[in-house]
Image 1 (tube, rainbow, N blue to C red):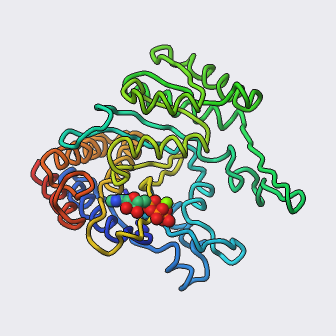
Image 2: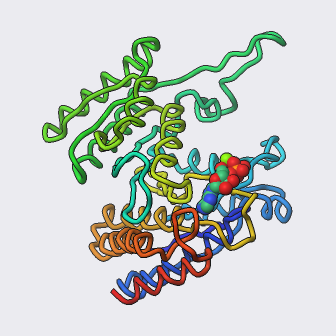
Image 3: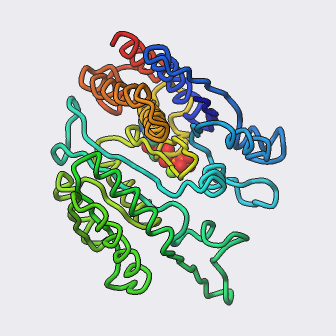
Length: 353
Ligand code: ATP
Ligand code: MG
């Protein structure tokens, strides 16, 4: 399996170095034959090649089997005509990575504020309220007069169907329950379509139970009793907001792994940003990126029916849980180690299985 590795900004180079060390250990232990190919995107690429993502890089990514993207500091990426496109947005769009899968769970050894839970938010990643995803050329936000702005939200049958299918298939591998989150009481047409199609797709999965919540009430339910949820499927913006809440409820943003997946490509990416306040200090938690990498291995193993990749992914998930329980982790999750030492200890743990 060929993986293009883009370390990113802020804490990215540190957490990606730890992740690469863990992937290399997994590759040796499970004979995966991983080829990790470093490249660059974002600020360095903009300075050197005039674009945050070059056409040549997109071609390389398309001919590889997967992508690991580090966090990007995007505050000064404003003018896309000058090549300043946000690489995260760019890859999600150009590789059609429609499912943003964001697990959130608690671990033994950490103080769980709300008791133990284990859920996954499946967020639609290609349409909805985010104007950059709606129309091929340009934005669906507009300034009608200097004082009136309009944002359009697009929901399509095709995108509802494929995100619903992703959620139900995932639920089948877990606790066989899907919760649909929507605002169909107000957005009757668009969210009405989303919820109807989710139920329609659900009929192909009679072994999976379904319920649905209005997004505002959902915020209360997920804080009150996160353990009642298994897989949560929702549209782009609701999923963006809800998954930050669930990541934080699980104990640390540094545990927020995620996968952006389409039918052909997938990209592992931590759910948080570049955390410039702690960059370069060897204290960032690498587990968010390590877990994202394990999700990428799992995706590849399922797609190509390769049991060794599924086993490697499971071993990484288990090793992270064991590392947290025994305190071989960074401070944000109760450990005492630095980023580098945490990565090295996890790699060691995998080699010793
Ligand atoms: P960006 O502008 O790139 O989004 P940000 O300033 O919004 O960066 P985030 O990365 O979104 O910062 O994270 C918010 C805070 O959460 C950080 O300031 C940091 O303290 C903490 N944090 C985020 N990721 C990690 C991590 N991997 N390990 C430890 N702490 C983290
Ligand atoms: Mg941020």
